[in-house]
Image (cartoon, rainbow, N blue to C red):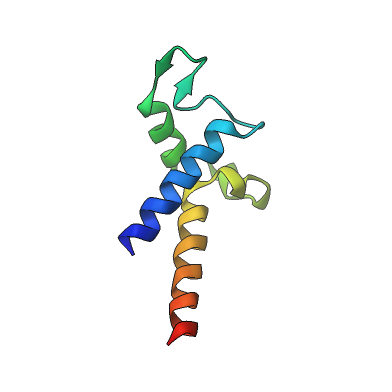
Length: 80
């Protein structure tokens, strides 16, 4: 399960860094590294209700985790 969470987190960070809608979250303008920018985006769904609307699910870290963990559990169930 920890490997799944790690893969989801890395995938999410890469997606928000290079997505046309967001971009430059944790590495800004090829000048400096901002890990707090990535952390702030990850916890933002707890601060803003609009992040829970389906149109925002692609940049909602919690939704990525839920989808990834549920998918992993379903795949494990199918394999057994």
